[in-house]
Amino acid sequence: MEASVGAVEHIISYSFTDKTLLEEALTHSSYTDFPSYQRLEFVGDAALGLAFTNYVFLAYPHLDPGQLSLLRASNISTEKLARVAVRHRLYRYLRHKSAAIDDKVKEFVDAVSKEDDTAIYGGIVKAPKILADIVESVAAAIYIDINFDLQRLWVIFRGLLEPIITLEELQQQPQPVTMLFELCQKQGKRVDIKHWRKGAKNIASVYVDGVFVASGSSEQKEMSKLDAAKQALRKLSQSMPISIGPPQFSVELNGSFEIEGAKQKLHELCSMKKWPKPIYRIEKDAGPPHERKFVCSVQVATIGGTFFMVGDEKSRIKESDSSAASYLIRALHESNYL
Image (tube, rainbow, N blue to C red; front, top):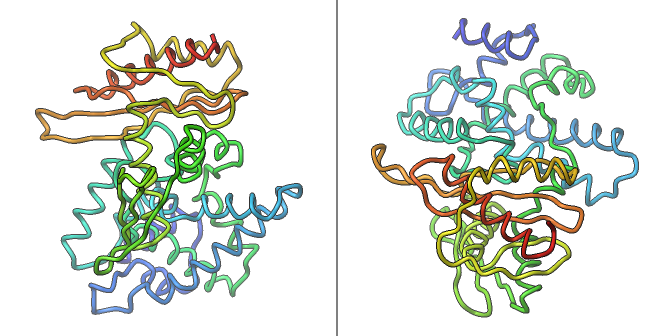
């Protein structure tokens, strides 16, 4: 633990006066020989939230409360903080006695390593809450060690949270629930999201015109709703392209459709049109190692709206990216964007 404390101090560029605070922040409740981080996590959650609130309030004087709340939620969410723990490898220094923790963390770390860009609303594997807990606990340990100086906490801790998710990035990656409702509204369809519980899990089910489409689950109600919306968008995008904002369009995508060098051509197109670069995501990663199958999506923000397409299932990520790019180029062409 002494070595772990030293390593984490190096990562955060701060040397503790009371090193037992950091030792506690790195101790899970399964390790019963020392106080766990649970109390620190409680403090860290509130302290980080207030520190970030102060930051966005001062940095964005013209944003309304709803936009400020969106920025704060995106930057201190479980998904974001878990990726902070992965990026800085803080999880390596957690003291615990649970093999299940190692399995969950490894699965998530492997998934994050395949992400091309910031996964604002989560990736193919849900972030283990324990990773976000570590970050919040370390923040609390610093906060207490510097005698509850919130401004100094932000100066010390901000670097760990970089890159900060901006409002422009959020606008380029619309929130899945909003995206789902806007898509169905354009098609004249009604969306219902119903919630129920199964043990400790919250279940959210999406219905379109009364027909079940998809469901998602999480310990948190909002996360289950988010997951259900993402699953529904993936299914619906197989039969119709998704556009947020004008223009409304419809393109049939039945059968094989591939454009040679589609990914590069889409990149060049965005550069020529001065649109943000395409955002690719792994939507599905399944199968044994020797028969791995991937489904990828691509999203492009244009002046007229954000376009989202899902490619065909392929044995390589690169091929599925190209498939998604092909579909998106075709959709842009048929909607008179080219």
